[in-house]
Picture 1 (tube, rainbow over the protein chains, first blue to last red):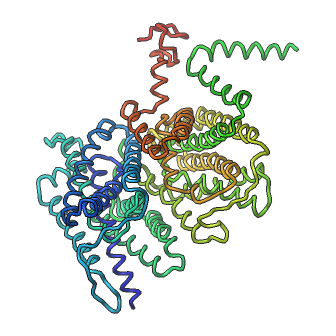
Picture 2 (cartoon, helix red, strand yellow):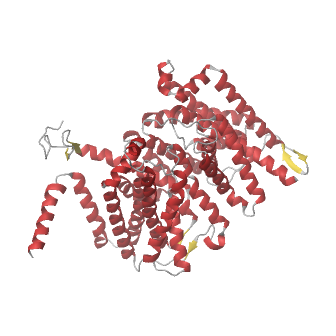
Picture 3 (cartoon, rainbow over the protein chains, first blue to last red):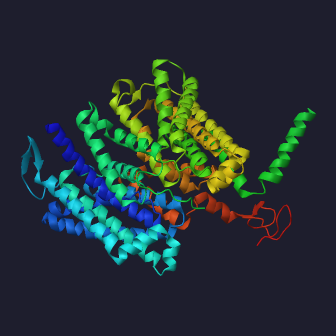
Length: 291
Length: 346
C-alpha cells in the first residue's frame, strides 16, 4: 500500500516538473521554431541563483526565488538577442548555439560553485502521513505551485491579447504578420515567458533536489521526450505526456530491481512505443508538410 | 614502361589542370601530405596521440554529415553507433579473442544493425520529432549497460582490450590512413547517384517520391552507411584507448558530433573533418587553462556561428573561390573570367 502512495507522490511531482519545462520548451518552438537545448540550463542557473541568495547573501528563500526568476529571464532575453536572433534562419546553427550556451552556463557554474553537490533548505518544514508514507509539506507545496503556474499560463494564453498573438503566430507566422502582429516582438515576449517558466520550475524544485552543474541533462532529455510524446506545440499533450512519463519513471524506480539505472530507458521506450503507433504524438496535429 | 609513363603524364595533367587551379584542392593535398608525413618529423607520443584521436573523431563527424547533412535526417543520438561499435569490438575481443582487424569490421556491422533498428521506427518521423527521438536511443542503451554490469562492466566499462598495433606510430598510421580512406569513400558516395538522391530527399522528399524513387529504402541506406562508418570509428576508439565505457554513449558525445559538423559546415564531408582537426587539438592545447577550457570552447563556437552560420569551411571557401555564373565551375577569386567557359565573373 505505501508503495502505491510513494509511486503516486513521486509521479505527480516529477510529472508536474516535466510539464512545466515541456510547456515552456514547446511555446518557444511553436512561435519561433527554436529548439532551445539551453532551456533546462536556465532552470539550473535559477536553482544556483537561489542557492547563492540563501547561502551567500543569507536572504529569505522567497526573495531568492523572486530574484532568480527576474535575473534568469533577463539573462534569457539577453542571450536570445545576442546569440540566437541573428542566426534564426539557420536551423542547425541555432541548435548548436543553444547547446554551446548550455555548456557555457554549466562551465560558469562549475567555476563559480565547483562541481560539488549542494542543497537549499525547504521553505516549509514538517510532513504529514498518509497510509504510513511520509509526505513532506514541501512536496505538496511544489505540486500546488506547479498547478497554479500552469493555470496562470492557461489564462494568459487563452484569455489575453498577448496569448492570442502567441497562439496565432505559432499557427501561421506569415498570416499573423499580415494581421499586424509584430512577429519579432512576439518571439521576444515568448522567449521571456519560456525562460521565465524554466526559472520558476527551477525555483520550486530546488528544495527537493541536490544542485550540481550537470543537473540540466536528465530533465532536458525527459522534457524532450515529453514534448515529442505529447505532440510538438500542443499544451494539452505536454501536460498529459509529462504525467505519463513521470509515472512511468516512478513505477520503474519503485518496482524494478535496477530501477534507478533503468528509469530513463523505460520512460524513453514508452515514448518510442507511442510514436510507433502515432507518429505525430498523442495530441499533435500532423501538419501539411512545409515546402 | 609506356603505360607507367602514360599514367605519370596523366597524373601530372590532372595535378596541373584540376588541383593546382583551385586553392581548396591544394589545401586538401597538403592536408593529406601533412598527416602522412608527420611521424617523420616528430615522434612525440603526446602529439601523435592527439592526432590519432582527432582522426578517429573525424570519421565520426563525417559519418554524421553523411546521414544528417545529406539526407536531412537530424540524428541527435549519433553516439549510439559509436558506442555500439566500441562495445561490440570490446566484447568480441575479450570473449572471442578476435584481433583488432576482425573486431572493428564486426563492430561496424553491429552498428549497421543498430542503424536498422533505430532507422525503421524513425522513418515515419521527420524534422524536430526525429531529432528528439533519436536522442533517446543511446540513453536507453546506456540504461541497459548500467543494468547488466556482469556483461558490460557497468560504470567502469570493459578494459584490457588488445592494442590496435605495437607502437604509437603504427596506431597513428592505422587511424590516419583509415580516416583518409573512409572519408574519401564517403565523399565519393555523396558525389554518386545515391548522393544526389540523398540531397534531393533533404530538399523535397515529396518530389523525390513523386519521381518514383523509394525514399524509405534510401533513408534506411543512409542510416546503415552512417552507422557503418561511425561503428568503425567506435571500434578504433575502443582498441586505441583499450577501454569501452559508458562515456562512448553519452549525450555530450552526440552533441559534440553535431557541434563539430555544423561548425565546419554540413553537406560537405570535408567541413566536419576539418572542424574536428581545428576544434579537437584546440581543446587539447587549451589544457593549460584547464578550468576555462570548455567555456572557451563554447565561446569560440558561439562567436564563429554569429559571423559564419553556414560553417567555417564553407565561409572560407566562398572567400577564396567564386562559382562561374554560366557553367557552375569553381574559380579562384582572383580571376576575372571563368577558367573553362571564359564568362566574366562578377
